[in-house]
Length: 93
Image (cartoon, rainbow, N blue to C red; front, top):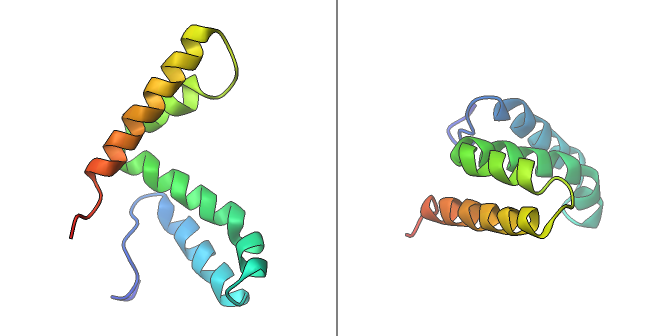
């Protein structure tokens, strides 16, 4: 990686490379957004899983399908925990 490219770590490198390649193939705009959407989402999910692994796993398992009122509440709590975890890692500068 060059010094201008961020380090994404672990298994996310392959997705980062694919996304930058997709961005090179399409001009900025709607076409790029549509063409690169699935790679962008996969990279985001990969990075979230690295930054907040327990919270990401909880959301994935508790929010994967419908269910009882208890499961829906647990899903909401897991989503909130993930949001708090991600917020704690944001650059405040």
